[in-house]
Length: 235
Ligand code: C5P
Image 1: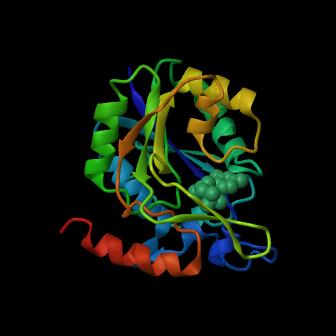
Image 2: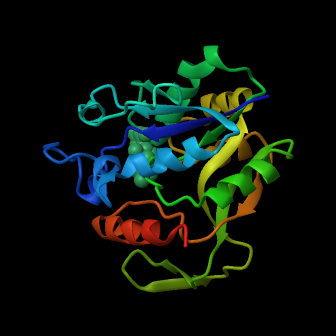
């Protein structure tokens, strides 16, 4: 049984100030963080893990940025698939379909957002150890720390939501190729993570506790934060 990483990287990153209508600025995965594109940090962590045999990067068919960078030396570790969709779920499913002839249904696939460059290597190992022993698979997640409010639709508090037992889902999310493909085909394109698709099959993915360093770069200020976290990741 093998482990593969699938990295959805077909978003326009409009909330981070990239992409958008004019597409003058590169999407967030290509924004520089500590002198290299954000996606390179993400790929370095995954490529350093010896149990992961290959990284499949799923780009938008119209991506004009990937080829602007030097990927020499990565050829044995990375396969680029230019089949991203209009939603993250579509991108992941298209990627799973495209890699199907290179893996078996029982192989593990770790889906990891290109926009999460600060994944600590020890957390990746913990996920492989714990979810790799699980019949269903699992995901990195963090227990909710803040008090949660539900609004009334008019910027006022309707209710306080008890946070006990609530987690924020992160990535990687790790499931067997065959099961994940079946789940995503059935789930449609509205879901925002792989675990939700697996849950819709009536299964219960394992929660593997991570921490707040594994941020998803979403807004412009997150790029600065990611740079700071990366500087201290190996302290
Ligand atoms: O938009 P969001 O922050 O949820 O994106 C999470 C990840 O999914 C990013 O790495 C982004 O590039 C990817 N994505 C994708 N295809 C889309 C939308 C998002 O691969 N259509």
